Amino acid sequence: TARLQSVRAEHASDWLAVYDTAAAPWLSNSEFRTACCLRLGLPVCPANAVCDMCGSAVDAEGHHMLACIRGKHAVHGPLRNTLHSLCAQALLPAVREGMPFAAQGEAVSHMRMDIVVSAGPDERPLLIDVGVTSPFVHPDLAARAPGAAATAYEAVKWRTYGHAVQPQVHNFAPVIADSLGAWGGSAMETLSFLASAYAQRRAEAHGDTWRGKAMFFATLSLTLQRHLARVATRWHILT
Image 1 (tube, one colour):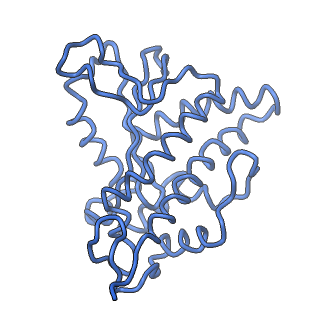
Image 2: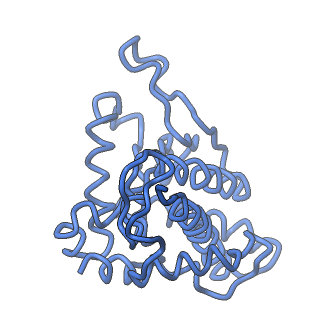
């Protein structure tokens, strides 16, 4: 099923690992309880509730809130900010809300990337666009493989920005997570590069690159689950 494929994906369960909480605060009791319900498919709200963000009727499992465009925006910002902070801690020159196409003409000069890392794995600027999707929007697709929903959503990002990307100049990297924690294929490549840089920097002080990589992914995973849990509780009952 879509749920099982997502939760078994690499790094989807990192928020459940025991790790150094100095990197990111642990979930509150209510956030942890809600995140566990989302993971297990248990109810997070009454069946007669409506979404605080758009006014639509919601399902008991909270699938609507996780797919609601306003809900995704509420998760996107903190996830982008956390990733940018991790880049900074890795001493990677990175600009948030960068405009890498400014010299390419009026049609695309206004387009922004969530994070622009000045030099990626092959020295080209790494253009990161963060996104969140739900595996329950197209469950048949999500059930094909771990991270399939997130990987499929990468195509949406390419349709939006592909005409502006110059492959010989830019390395465009959609970093997409689904609402159960699975990352898309492009995200895994990009995050592995960033995690290695973060771990190398951390190893200079602590001498342990494995722990640094684990901390990198756990910090992202915690941020994702914290804000998904908060979004999933944004409902009320009509009286």
